[in-house]
Amino acid sequence: MTERELIKLEATIRNKMEEIRKQRVSLKDSGIGGLMNSLKKVDEALYERILPEYKKMAIESNIFKK
Image (cartoon, rainbow, N blue to C red; front, side):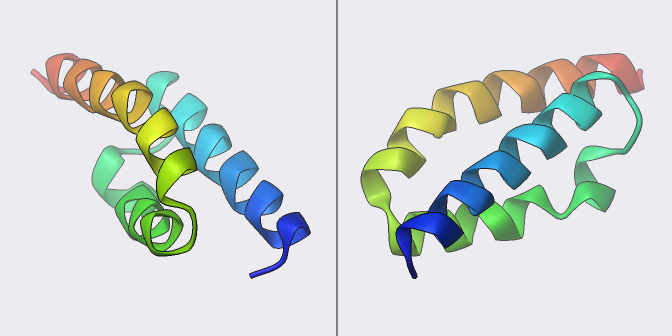
Protein backbone atom coordinates (compact mmCIF):
# COMPACT_ATOMS: atom_id res chain seq x y z
CA MET A 1 0.00 0.00 0.00
CA THR A 2 1.36 3.40 -0.93
CA GLU A 3 1.70 6.31 1.49
CA ARG A 4 -1.14 8.09 -0.28
CA GLU A 5 -3.47 5.10 0.09
CA LEU A 6 -2.55 4.83 3.76
CA ILE A 7 -3.40 8.50 4.35
CA LYS A 8 -6.72 8.00 2.55
CA LEU A 9 -7.51 4.93 4.69
CA GLU A 10 -6.79 6.87 7.88
CA ALA A 11 -9.02 9.73 6.72
CA THR A 12 -11.82 7.31 5.88
CA ILE A 13 -11.61 5.71 9.32
CA ARG A 14 -11.65 9.09 11.07
CA ASN A 15 -14.62 10.25 8.95
CA LYS A 16 -16.58 7.11 9.80
CA MET A 17 -15.78 7.57 13.49
CA GLU A 18 -17.18 11.09 13.30
CA GLU A 19 -20.34 9.87 11.52
CA ILE A 20 -20.85 7.27 14.25
CA ARG A 21 -20.38 9.90 16.98
CA LYS A 22 -22.98 12.11 15.31
CA GLN A 23 -25.31 9.09 14.98
CA ARG A 24 -25.54 9.35 11.20
CA VAL A 25 -24.66 5.68 10.88
CA SER A 26 -24.47 2.79 13.34
CA LEU A 27 -21.21 1.16 14.35
CA LYS A 28 -22.28 -2.08 12.69
CA ASP A 29 -23.46 -0.51 9.43
CA SER A 30 -20.40 1.72 9.04
CA GLY A 31 -18.00 -1.11 8.16
CA ILE A 32 -15.29 0.51 10.26
CA GLY A 33 -14.20 -2.81 11.78
CA GLY A 34 -13.00 -4.09 8.41
CA LEU A 35 -11.14 -0.86 7.77
CA MET A 36 -9.44 -1.10 11.16
CA ASN A 37 -8.37 -4.68 10.38
CA SER A 38 -6.94 -3.54 7.04
CA LEU A 39 -5.05 -0.76 8.78
CA LYS A 40 -3.61 -3.19 11.32
CA LYS A 41 -2.21 -5.37 8.52
CA VAL A 42 -0.63 -2.42 6.73
CA ASP A 43 0.59 -0.09 9.50
CA GLU A 44 0.57 -1.45 13.05
CA ALA A 45 1.89 1.80 14.58
CA LEU A 46 -0.91 3.91 13.10
CA TYR A 47 -3.42 1.26 14.14
CA GLU A 48 -2.16 1.44 17.74
CA ARG A 49 -2.47 5.23 17.64
CA ILE A 50 -6.09 5.17 16.40
CA LEU A 51 -7.25 2.22 18.53
CA PRO A 52 -7.84 4.16 21.81
CA GLU A 53 -10.03 6.69 19.94
CA TYR A 54 -11.88 3.83 18.24
CA LYS A 55 -12.54 2.06 21.55
CA LYS A 56 -13.79 5.27 23.18
CA MET A 57 -16.09 5.94 20.22
CA ALA A 58 -17.42 2.36 20.31
CA ILE A 59 -18.26 2.63 24.01
CA GLU A 60 -20.01 5.97 23.47
CA SER A 61 -22.02 4.64 20.53
CA ASN A 62 -23.24 1.72 22.65
CA ILE A 63 -24.40 4.13 25.36
CA PHE A 64 -26.39 6.14 22.82
CA LYS A 65 -28.20 3.01 21.59
CA LYS A 66 -29.98 2.40 24.91
